[in-house]
Image (cartoon, rainbow, N blue to C red; front, side, top):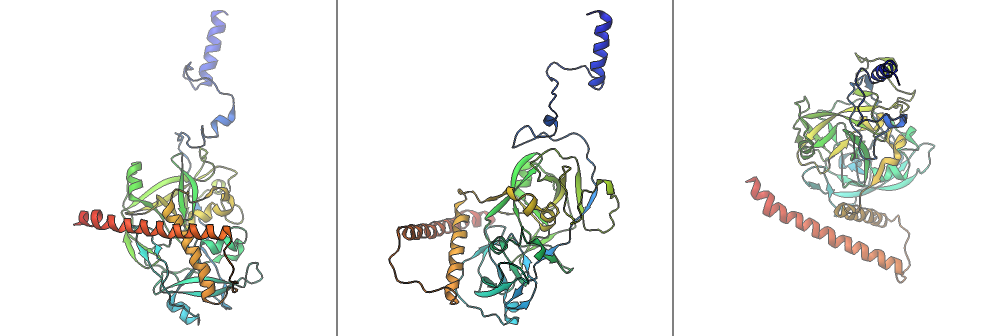
Length: 407
C-alpha cells in the first residue's frame, strides 16, 4: 500500500470516528442491537446524551364505583392495601352490620407501626353488567380511616378489575386534600420491577398513594441529593401524619431497562408550557406508548423509617399502564421474607373464618382430616408460632435497643 493510499484510508477512519483516531482497544461493533440493549439483564451504562424532557399529562386519577349492599357508592381501588377496609361511620350510614371481634393488626409503611380494626363486615359488591359481581367480601372496619372505603389487592386481582376490566374504574371526583395520602396498608404481597440509574430494582405499587416515596436509608445509601420541597408531610391510611425530609427527582424506567430515548416529566397542568406534540408518545386512551423507549422523571418524597425502598403512586402506575403493559414485572414476595408471608397467610385464613362468622360458609361434616388437611394445619400452626416469635423479637429489640437510643 502506497503512502497516498494509507493517508486516504486514515482520513476516512478519522471522519467515521468523529475526528478522533480509532483506538485499538475499542473494536468496531457492527451489531446495531449492541447500542440499544443493556449489556446485561441487570445493568446498562447511563447514556451521556442529554435527553429531551417534555411534559406528559398524567391520566385522571381513578376510583371504583361499585354497588355496596345494592347501594351505588365509590371506593378507592388500592393495590397497596392487603385487604378491603371501610370507615365505621360510613358503614353505619349504609346500614351495614358490623361484627366487633378481635382482628389481626395491619402494618403501616413506616417504623413497624401496626393498627388494629375494631371489627369486620360482610358486604356484597356488584358491578353493573360485569362478571364476578354480586359476591360477598369481608371488609375490616376502622374508626377513622383516610378513605370512606377501599377495595384491596386481593379484590382487584380476584375480579380482574386492575387489568382485564379497567373500564370499571371511573375518573375520581376532584377533592381538595390537606395532605397527600400514602395508603399502603398491610404487608406487601407483590412488588414491581423497574430500573433506576440503569440498575434493576423492585418497588411497592400503591394505587391508593398520591405521591411516590423513598426511604431515607435508601436515598443516603445511593448518594442522592435530597432537595427541599413544598410537600412537608404525608398522611397514612389510619389518618396519622409523618414529616417529609425532602424530595429526590430521578428517572425511572419500566421497559426492560433499555437506555431511554425520552424523559417524561409528569404534570397535571392542562396546558403544559414546554409541551411538544411531536414528543408526546400518547395513544387515544392516554397511556404511554412504548414503541419509543421512555423514562419517567419521578419525584420521590423521602420518609424516615420506610419499610421498603420505594413506593410508586397511582400517577406513575397509570401513566405506564403497569398492570397491563408490564404485568410480567409483578413478582410475588420472595420466600425469604418470611414474617410478611406469614402475616399474609394468617390474614387470608382470618378472612375465610369471617365467612363462617356471617353464616356465609356451608356447614362442613364432621369427618377426619385428610393427610393434606393435616399438613395444611401444621403449616398454619407453624405460621402462628413464627409470627409470634418474630413480633416478640421486635418488641424486645424496641425495648432493649431502640428506646434506650431515643433517650
